[in-house]
Length: 322
Image 1 (tube, helix red, strand yellow):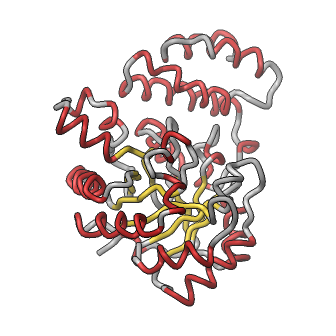
Image 2 (tube, helix red, strand yellow):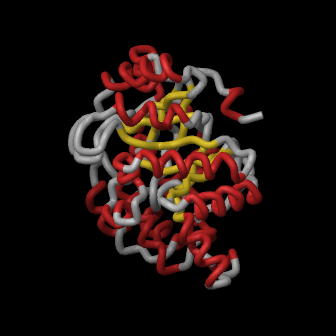
């Protein structure tokens, strides 16, 4: 049975975020208060096929397979994939099923131009028939429940046209980023639109779970959105930055600085174990999130940005903030 069937509202899920929700960060979140559902970073289905079947890269040397690493304590977990080709979606869905994931999610909301040029991400909103084929291919490829993450429209809000297309394919869940592609993240998420989405869902396919996404910084705020709009759950993205305790109901302000810095050190060492040395710079976005809001934060942050290893990062913290 789909794990989605056992989830009770209100529930909270981890957003799939590039260069953020890798296995190391998920482990830190799991330790400090797990979400109801984990998500991976999004992975190119075409890229997975090319690196495994054409280039014949071993999984341990394949950078895309690193995005699909799994550890205990990170379940249920959904692997997010993207492609505009049904056969590639089918290939990736079968792969993540074999790897032990609990679900597969199709990205139909990423606004990155490089992704859109492939007909993927938010470009799917403009090609509803392709979107239908992609969902059908994923559902036919394995027994995993299929979900979709998308936006409320492309240049303008188009829930009346777009949401019924998805609901007709009966995914297990739909996550709505409550902005259009044109808006990116430049304006506040419009949670009023979730009320409209819920009404459409209730009329057309009440069995599909609706998850709201956009500007949620805490569980308390998310619960209020659920109560106000009638959606089933909330996805938290940037609210996780510097706050792996968010799903436990703790805010950034409630966490002592020493605990934040210890968590950053732990994350750095875990990250270094799974990634090649040249990738350590990816950790910088976490440094910005953890090292903020206290006297001397800017100076410590500047020093940490120069670190090239976990041990160096740890040394700088211990020397400058004990």
